[in-house]
Amino acid sequence: MMKKIKLFSCLSAIALLTGCGLFSPTMPQYSPQEQLSDGAFAVYLAGRYDSPLPQNPGSGILFYHPEKQEWSRLDLKGLDGGALSFDGQELHYKDKVNDYILSADGVKTIEHPQQEMLTISEQIPLPGEGTGSIALVNSGNPTQIITVQGQERTLHEVPDSLSMMATCPDGTVWAMGQSGEMKADPVESAYPPDRLYKLYPEFSATPVAEYKSEQPANTTQHFVCSDNVIYYIIDSITPPAEGLAYAGPEHYTGSKLVSYDTQTGEYREQDISGDLATRLNDQMWSPTLSPLYLYDGHLWWVSGYGKVVKTDLATAQNTVAFDLGDFEPSKDIGYLMQEDKYLFRFILDLSGETTIYRYNLETEQLESRATVPGVGDATPSDQHPFTVEVLDLEALLKL
Image (cartoon, rainbow, N blue to C red; front, side, top):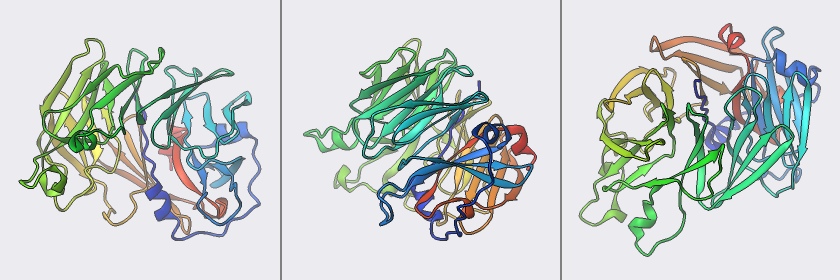
């Protein structure tokens, strides 16, 4: 099964709020089942809790209906950062009061204890259609893990900060994190080991494995799982003579592909070669603008230059495949997500049209650029787009 990963960020949300359309409280009326069945993709609207507007600004989901070229909205009870997961049958989502499962049979509601603020950093389907979902609630350390199956909701907690998950072919779900614990050695505190947690089907409250390169390195915690082997990239630092505390982007001297075999427990580290082998430098402070995607034996990622790069899992060779196009580092990149062999980029401008770029990872080129009505009229002033989920790939390909 192709793993879906999406990118959402507060940076994207803030950048898009610079121009806001006029919110229309009157929206086309659809039942939740019709929203799911007719929608090509959905957008989670998070509440703006930092605004001087109502104490609970609420939240919601926007559904785009391509046949009528219009948006509909499903109002929720507030969340400062939400995520959606769709497995082909069920759409899972949350707010401050409930967990929800929307399917052709209607909406199932599971009440949960209210929390002051709730940020879902990621939510993915459990392996298999109609099985359930697993989500990370991350506002720092510790991290809560919420699993929903049927009408059962399970809450676990780990001491580390987890932000990304991956599903392996054997049906296991993993997360990566790092400890925020301060050590006597400042270098150890600044560059803690990467820790892997097994979340499903058996949950481990302690790390199953951890890894630290001999050379100081940063990791973005984005990873994938192929053939039950976990892969991710770290960026190595050669400290200046003054010491590691004085290291800047110009002291990054290379990147490495790290792998962990979940069956044998073996770690492996390979130096990356080829294009953008050193992902950070004095001109580029962010090594990547996206999570890692998995396709055709390669890791795919979007560099801070807007170049789409693929890293060969076998050889650790980097190749620039293509450019995003219409991209400037100073501007918002939008929302990125992978579906099968396609990489989609959604630009949700609250003051104009919504632009959808479709890139084909097989042909390595921009395949289409479509515009649909903007979300400004459908978005309350105290909410903002936070993440995107594809509901109907076939309908999205026709836009």
